[in-house]
Length: 130
Image (cartoon, rainbow, N blue to C red; front, side):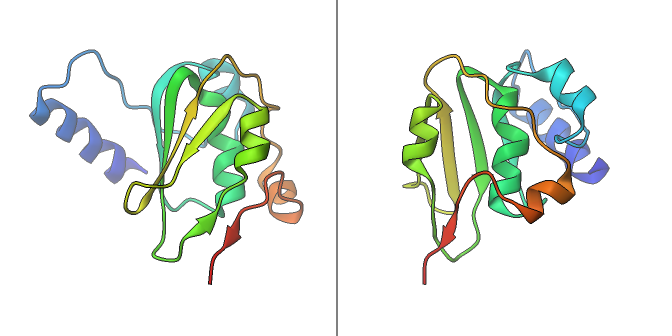
């Protein structure tokens, strides 16, 4: 995580982006969730677990109007647009290699469960397309 967050901090400085912060931590940990719940305009996620666990861990960190960007593998997935729509989110899969999930309204999804529980029983059904 340190290499990635160091690079992201460097890139933001180089691009001249103002008023930003980069946070390093495990998104499923309750102290991270309590401290940063609904706080970020943009949350990025790349390769830290199955898509359903990534979604469960990160979705509560974005504020209304904010976006969760998830890096996608070459195989496209079917994202649970109905379920997410019911929680106040919209899904955009038109960006190459990315899924953008926007919080359209204030949301209060459940806090993430332990990593082991997420893997055993995914909260969101995300299907690899063949």
